[in-house]
Length: 182
Ligand SMILES: [Zn+2]
Image: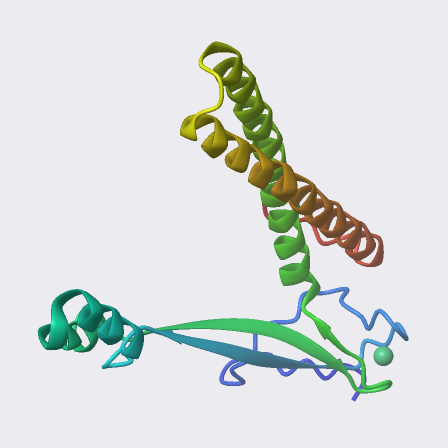
């Protein structure tokens, strides 16, 4: 009863990678568990919003718009693997998955953040050029708004990337033998 990884044929649980232990009490007495998130999108049948909008635009015939347009319901299921520590009750995400997710979040957040900085700078350059050339116009207002949106999004994305990096560092310090598959 030292290791309780319910792995092997027919157990339905993924094989626990070697060297995974409870980050709280270092116990290897772990039970694998899977949580499934199911998200259903579309397929609601009649959509009130669309129907009302259709009614406003096309009268009673427009109400029919509410019942068409979304035919198929799509269910997306994501499996998340956790371990429950049999000694202290701590439940934690499978570190292999957590490291992979944090790596992706860090890369995406950083790339998007840098992209937003570049975009914001470009928008403001165009804005300055426009207002110097033809004065204020609708175009300069659009570039001002775009630039502001990018300027607000950039730090949010970069902070998220930094958080993911910190999480990744913590995980890699705990489980140095697990290397992200990317
Ligand atoms: Zn524990």
